[in-house]
Length: 585
Ligand code: DGT
Ligand code: CA
Ligand code: CA
Ligand code: ZN
Image (cartoon, rainbow, N blue to C red; front, side, top):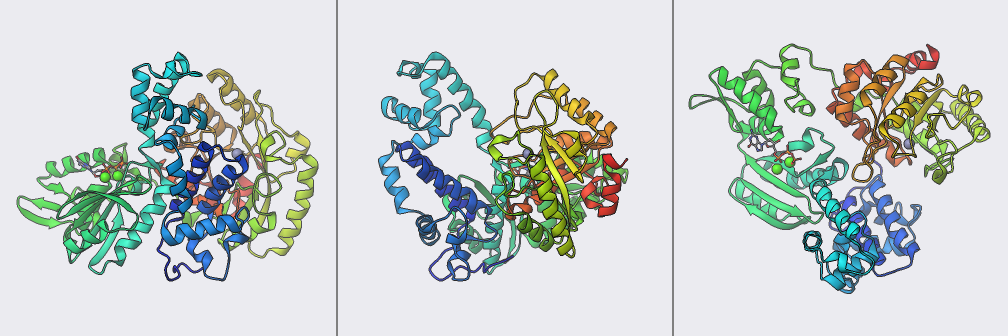
């Protein structure tokens, strides 16, 4: 990890995600205050940039490197970020909040409500929260406002209901920042021996409801006090002798349990869940005359084991089952039969097969991306810039790609350990045709095809569209196959079963995209594809060198989908990968 992670004196540690959250709130508040759009956008872009920094923000204030060297961050923003890092907040945000109608920021996060409507709802109807908004809609008060009709009111009610369920959950990538920081913080406490994250986070679910932290300690009261005093906590919701719950400024709740040393494995198993998995394992124990709980394995009143998580499985005659599989979805039967998959790991990944450069919508150059991939230990990297149809991203045309190939050749002559592949992410038109013609497509080492438009075609039309793309002989990989963006865009309506079967039949590999908001295919689709005999590719879809690390999230999602290392093309050596491509067969 480059850079110095030690905060300078006078700077408390703050997560990049927290800094980003504050910058985003400034953007929202400015927009509500009718500020200049460029100023609003500058804060939102800065939030994204901060999230992607390769090191903690405070490491940018100790001389060696400077935040102002980061594209998009000028001296003004750098000053603001410095203030956040020093004080945990911003004077500006306090001023803005004072001038903004209460609750308006929350209202703006309801789909269909922009700053103008949020202001009106807050000032005219006195709506102060999303709950209040739902109440006002049910009482049919919203339709009485000018510019709001009955239809708007109904759609607001639907959105609030839909968001109520998903908004409570945080994406895995964001939760990871808070969770890992909290673990480090808990491990600093003198009495703490072990600290681990359990729950849905350990099972690698794509979102988490809350975080579950387990610790063993020689001094439970001191450890609980340390937890409650966490600088990231906005409230202590519960506090007992062996457990406590806090809420972080981001809204994320964290449960802490203090565990006796000899029960650590039992508690880790219990609090990792899922509940359905736990119940099934406990039942197996009961059949053997054993009691299994969060303290251990018992025969009658006698404690037998539970120090190590393996003890829990051993007690019921099973090998250890990876947390990602623990959903009582067949993992217990597979373990009993000795046919658990050898799940793909980050270490097994030899290269990345999707990334973008400044030649389309990436933020770093071809050479930068290649050098970063080499530094990450990869053997190969496919550069897969967009084709022209993806207009917002300024894709490359045939001539542009030919020029890029010459630069790739020159790069390959220079690089020692990494081989750069000539790739492309070619757009699939609404009718299923591709955005580049065969004469250029045949010149690539690897062709990814994907959907970036016409998301709302009928199921039949959408399925035909993808089938037609798959039938195209130059397509090697179907990238982010459902085009969903978590919390923003539903998956396209597809007969996934038919599409996956056809892809497998044609020898088209299926991507598991590691962008935190994509994670596409998702876990269930991976499992289905795997059962049909699919070959997978895990890609970061990096748009900067920092985003090459998104491989991690793709691997996690693939693991949840039971993906075996042997079935992942980019875990193969380059020669095998090239030989096995659809076009080579
Ligand atoms: P989440 O937080 O909604 O993303 O999902 P989890 O799985 O982290 O659920 P959470 O935080 O409520 O509880 C953590 C784990 O504790 C859960 O996966 C299994 C275990 N657990 C919680 N309540 C029960 C229960 O009533 N019975 C059993 N057997 N296990 C439970
Ligand atoms: Ca949880
Ligand atoms: Ca919990
Ligand atoms: Zn894409």
